[in-house]
Image 1 (cartoon, rainbow over the protein chains, first blue to last red):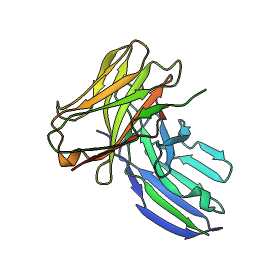
Image 2 (cartoon, chains in turn purple, orange):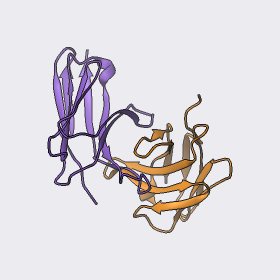
Image 3 (cartoon, rainbow over the protein chains, first blue to last red):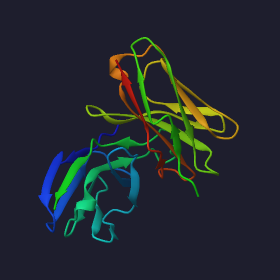
Length: 112
Length: 111
């Protein structure tokens, strides 16, 4: 099993601040996904990164896939209370039949 | 297009009982996967069904089982419930590999 380690486990910051969370592994992945999960809901796919060094932006969220395709980061600029949630990274087997393997996530709280 | 729906949303059972959870995938999605989410272990893959056939199974005991119907709806069953089975059970459907659309989950509490 290719493990994903996410850090930090918990993060609480003030509205307007910037932050970065990380997803690391010793394995090489063909792709990585980032999900956000809000309390009482299932995870929602934010982005899939495929190419080493790739950077994708989703409004104030910037996702980067490491050059070696072993790690990824999520940077949020000017965080807002609506960004509060559990951020999960995940990888699949490629064919999808083995299901996704998730990291344990970063619990993010943005205080107004 | 309607999302993935799961019923019931909340369930309380006692040890030794069995439970059946239901999942309706997004229309047109033939693959349905089930995951268990707990604070300690996070999200873990249970199994995936495609065209009524189980394609793969995660590392869970045989008390956890599932099935899929011809309309792609899926059910999972847990027999002889244990306290440690208390969790959020999530169903996801997909058309493409590695792009899962999750339902809101069923919160199971075992007393």
